[in-house]
Amino acid sequence: MSSVRTRIPPSPTGYLHVGNAWAAFFNWLFARRHGGRVVLRIEDTDPTRSSPEYERAIYEDLRWLGMDWDEGPDVGGPYGPYRQSERTELYREAAEALLRAGAAYPCYCTPEEIEQERQRALAERRPYRYSGRCRTRPEQEIRALRAAGVRPALRLDVGRFHDPAWSSGWLERRREEGGPERLYVVVHDLIRGEVAFALDELDDFIVVRSDGTALYNFANVVDDHGMRITHVLRAVEHLSNTPRQVLLYRALGWEPPQFAHLPVLVGPDRRKLSKRHGDAALREYRDELFLPEALRNFFALMAWYPEDGREIFSTEELVRRFDLSQVGRASPVFDRQKLVWMNGEYMRRALREDPERVVELVAGYLVRHGLLPGPPTSDQRVYVRRVVEVLGERIKEGSDVLRYGDFFFLDLPRYDPQAVEAYLRGEQAAAVLRLAREVVQVVEPYRADTLEGALRSAAAERGLSMRAMVHPVRVALTGKTVGPGLFELMELLGREQVLRRLEYGELLCRSAQAPV
Ligand code: GLU
Image: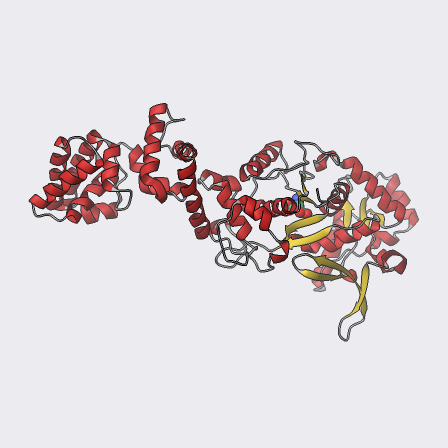
């Protein structure tokens, strides 16, 4: 086993969204590629927004996606606890270490004082940075504040790092053209290359709030170090946190892990992924019948471009071939159309290899959409199975089940007004339906092939084209102009249903004619 250790650090403040699932998948893929370990850490430091229900939902969704982890709150491991809310003591110890090292100082500033500083910066049109006032607050004042029971926050003393004794060997001295020499925190990002942050642009940030709780940057560093994380693959939104985290590692005398900041997913409009273009909870995709293997394949191809241009990869292949150095910096487009296409490919495979799985999924979908009253009886299951066979490759996502097959589960179809307008108008259409009804009444045996034969000859006898027969019949039976093969669906609907719908169609032809 290699020494690679990655982490998946969701905050249980909501359902896992595709963006986070995508980053989680990359951490998983990278660790598995290198025979390393995956750590799941629950970042629940915000008690007002975190909930155990969301935590459970995150496990469920990650497992559904096919992720597994070697250490985590639910499976244990040598570097736990794996829930931040249970690590308070570790943060406290690290905070003391910072104080002992002289790298942090208590800050007694009130929210009002901070607000004043912020307003001043705003008025002077400069970015707000904490003034460092508590760094030099007179001892006497501090004593008084303490006596009054004011509890301080803890801030990192960033100014300290200007002292060579603190920074030699890892802060870099650089001079930008014409400018003064400055110190830089240089991050060697595995995706972005070298990213330099000027030290003097970082202010003395808070690491522990006055109520004793650790802030994200601090908890993250204590945890990533404590959990022996070697590679942090995360969204580029966190890149601006990285120099602060590096300072914390160094202040504590620890070596930072390697960082790789993944690009932001964008929609086809090139803007940050929005609800309209596919930003949704992973479970919404599950509910829309996206298959986890299709999502994994799709996720892998966002930002990672295999050289041969192939698109379909099994997860085993992805694990074998994944190469972080091929992950680009450009924002990958979350192309829902492509995902639907890919899901269609995997659906086809599932239909071939495990049709019962598809039946199960489709039955669940029908229940959720009110087309089945509850878990299917064995008869209903057989029926769903036949519907799935008839719909076949048309099912690329859940909505296709309704788009092409809702009428199988309705007493009468939902008639598309445009289809009615086009095909169920007037006496001629009514006569076609009547003819079809006569054929259906007597055809024996009642099967797709015999239905087709009988309808064809009936049409030919009257000098009707098959088109003129098929369209009105289809609309009368299904309510729409698109769908599975007409004779197959007639067989499946059964003689009685077909007769009823044809008769109803005739009524529609005439009522459409009636003056309004
Ligand atoms: N809990 C943080 C998030 O979900 C983790 C960020 C990180 O990967 O460092 O954004």
